[in-house]
Length: 247
Image (cartoon, one colour):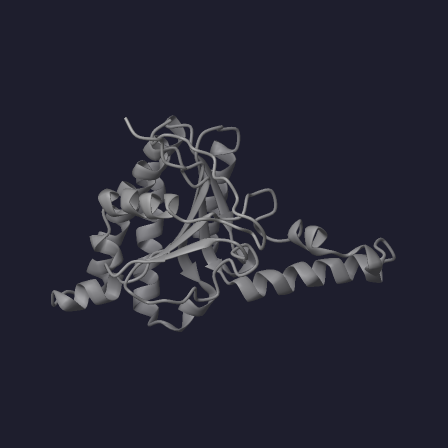
């Protein structure tokens, strides 16, 4: 047997290409989103089986509100269906579900579902499934800066005490490790306002496949590609901790 692969502790995915997948087949964009949800199910299981501790999925950005209202409505229906259908399995599998994003901007019924899912799974100790919903990195950083500014204005914080670590503790992702690997499907090579702060030293992998066509085999191939990367963090090569797939 060969050496075990160094498994990324945290993988984040920009799930891109649902609409194009549908258009290529003469289907409605909603059909592409439905197929994309099936891919989510497969990849969440694959990540869990591979030993990935944190999986963050970019499901709806703050910029997505410009899409047609009918498409947004269908996206919300699909999200509610996913939570209702899969929450029991996730909970039984010891998965902890977390939400990042602008919560006040999320429709009340969807927010209630997501908060209930967070509450139900908060004590689970297995995989962390992070849903980035109504999320935008610039807004996240601005909100963290505002939070610190309020503390300064109230005399509760010395401005000289503000550093990267303190600001990080006011981000949506406080308490979560930075992503080791960020994957984007559909062949686009940009990160679209996703985890800008947290991606400072992440490895990137851009995959030509559209999200509905992304398979567990593609996911494993991404882990293998990551294993060949040499992470330096601005200095010498960092040794990656080797953990076998599924350990």
